[in-house]
Structure formats: structure tokens, C-alpha cells
Length: 124
Image 1 (cartoon, rainbow, N blue to C red):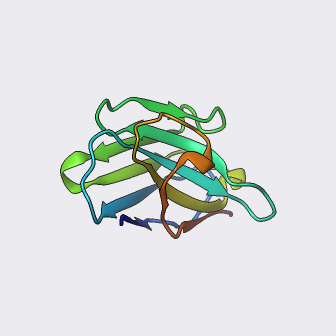
Image 2: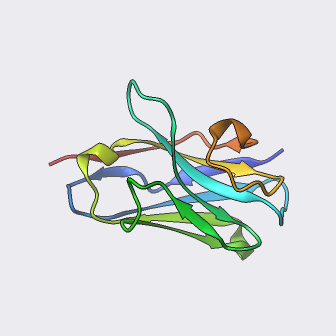
């Protein structure tokens, strides 16, 4: 069993930055893909970004491209999401997810494990 624990959420003013982290524990993996999704009140969960654990390949949703950066620390089984130039529409609960077969997918249903989520609120 894998546990994913997110951290780093909070309240931030528009235009500012925030970094989220997600630590995985319970087993090791090599061919996995880790991702960030978010869900705003009344909306469906949406893809934000993902990273190939072995390849380091990254992919971003158009809404966050050029503002957010995903990275990984392989030794610590941790990923980070650096979020710059935050906007009110970035307000959501951000979830970390893990896909163990290596499928580089943006579909939530393809991910095997999920964290509990961390709230990000962008407001003045």
C-alpha cells in the first residue's frame, strides 16, 4: 500500500507564489507517473501536471503552463509543484496522485493512489 501526503497549501495573494510537496511512502517504484490534480468547489477534478518517475518527462495543463513547474526528488520519493503568478481561479484543493504502470495519462481514473489534498486559496 502506498501513502501520499501533500503539504504546502495555504492562503496567498494574487500574483504571489506557493510550493506544494507530496511525499510517497509504503513501497518503492521506478516506472511510475506522479501527478497533481485540483478540484474547485462544484467542479470536477482536473489535471494540473504530471512527471514520469524514470524519464523525468513533464506535462502541464494549458491553464498552468508557463506558471507552474513540477519536479521530483527521486531519493526522497517526493514531488513538488512550484506555482507562480497565482490567480484567484487557481483556488482549489490540490491532490497528489500516483500511477504505477508508467502510463503518462491525464485521466484521474487511471491513477492508483491519491493523497488527501491540500487547500490553496488565492485571494486578496
